[in-house]
Amino acid sequence: MILNKIKSSEKIVRMIESNNVVVFETDKNAKKEEIKKEIEHLFKIKIKKINTQIVKNKKIAYIKLKPQFKAIDIANKLGIM
Image (cartoon, rainbow, N blue to C red; front, side):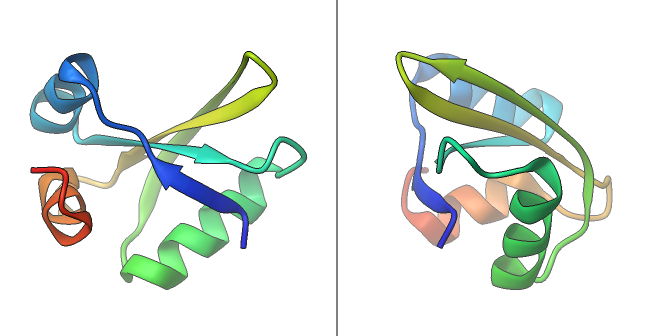
């Protein structure tokens, strides 16, 4: 499994609500294509774009969903909203 955990903070909640973006901490060696496949398979959604960032030896994936899928639905399923 590539995904470690979903990230949650005030800023991330605003991103979920306004930009349709969810944020996950992933395996540091995970490639964008691997992250995309895993998330699309787990949540039955389509991804528009993925940005990654390495912070303090952890990889953070910012996942923008296609407009027909709502990030808030993912956040609700995972219990952060």
